[in-house]
Image (tube, rainbow, N blue to C red; front, side, top):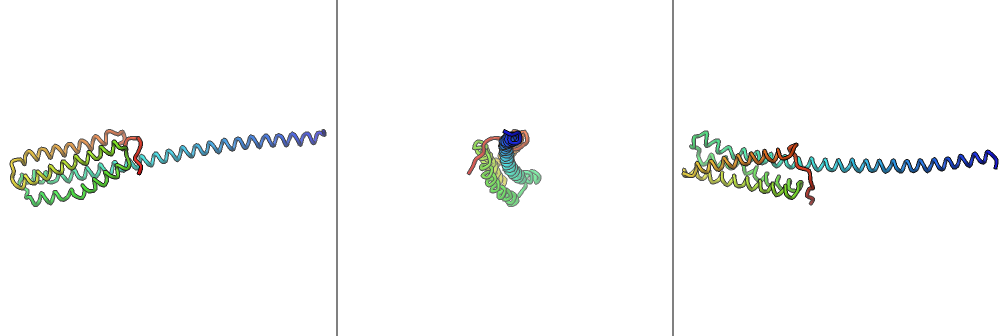
Length: 189
């Protein structure tokens, strides 16, 4: 065989081997790029879920805090008036929490779609606690309006309920290092 032909064959073989090596390298690079993109998409998805959960918690707790403040206004008003508040003024003050109460139920439902079943049950128990405080507020308003001797006892019970709500809000914020939701599986519709 002549040296030119040998050189051509060696060159062709080297080109083929180089092509195979380049193909294997491109394939490995494509797999690595695909894996990196999958990891990035997964991280973005988890971050999106975490942000959604955090926003749901923040909305729910903010609504409860607004409601807690609105519940406390009639008591402060009556304390400021020296117990001489009219029933009409107290009933007007009682009407303020109504919108916040329906908003709280709505936010609790939305939160339930974003968190674990245990966390959703905890939020529902929290709304039940708020309902109990509102019932105490209603009983206190009736006692104030009728001049009932139970007024002082109901006032203390209502204040304890409001402080309990504040403590619960504080615990729910401090139970997570960032004040946001704990990591874990979420509900799906």
